[in-house]
Amino acid sequence: MERESLLGANLADLERKFARIGLTKLDAKRVLPWIHIKCVSSFDAMTDVPHKVRSLLSEYFSLERPICRNLQKSSDGTRKALLEFPDGHQIETVFIPDEKRNTVCLSIQVGCAMGCKFCNTGQRSFERNLSCAEIMSQVFFWKDLLPTLKELAHPHLSNLVFMGMGEPLLNAENLFQALELLLDQKNHNFSRNKITVSTSGIVTHDLLRMAKFGIKLAISLHATTDIKRSELMPVNRKYNIDTLLNAAREYLRRSNSEHVTFEYLLLAGVNDSDANARQLAKLLSGIRCKVNLITFNSWDESTFRGSSRTRADAFLSLLLAKGIRTIIRKSRGDDISAACGQLKGTGERSGSDLS
Image (cartoon, rainbow, N blue to C red; front, top):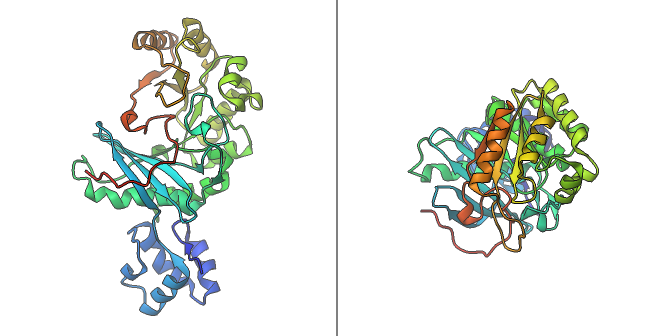
């Protein structure tokens, strides 16, 4: 019998699951903090849970993490893990250390259905959504690994970004279940200001439902006209730029967030002209926002080139002059294909580099 993972279970879930095998609500209350606060990977580690209960839990349930098939370390300290689930599907997740924060980039799907032309993940066909337990397992994986990373300025996860493989709003229910656990003060207790969900531009009711969490929203924009954006991002054919910007304004109103982040990938000769910068400033005028200008990270078979630093600086200056808060986002982990747009989620089953 395949055992069911409890990594995505909240208290109500545990009570329902435990009732089916004759365990009580008290048992569920005892077990919950061991899963989400102490983050144990074995029921035997739950020392205040009766042995009989632990044995029953081990028979029906699991706390196992996915198998790490490959762990790579970048020259800048970024790490990328290739994780495999029991059904053989693989995804990638990234750990980005910094002096003031440790950020984990989480995947939400196996593959991606969005087909953005500049994104390596989008060239892999969509296979399936990740369950809440599989989303959470990426957080557990990095939490387990942190104590072994002696060079870190501080040994805690501080920030989470849903910017890995897949479109979060096409797996909204599992995303929302994970957010509830991550934000719950009695569980992982992340700050709402430390979690960001990125969307390629899915404008459905789920986007506005997400506003109740008060988390940060990042929107992949990447073009200033519908014609160009539709060429780069097929999603624009269904949800155009005006629709997307109106949704961003409504998200700000409902979530009480400080700002929305617009991500803009600079592609040489495609979307990086002075005219593009002026048009972008016009589009975003009046919206509480920040713009992240992103350096294009190359991958095999890509036909795009990134803008030069001189062109990126000129684009930045034009936006700043128009009063748009803008930065050029520093690329991390590009030497191990861990940077924005490079994740693919397939690889050789090689050994891990834990150094």
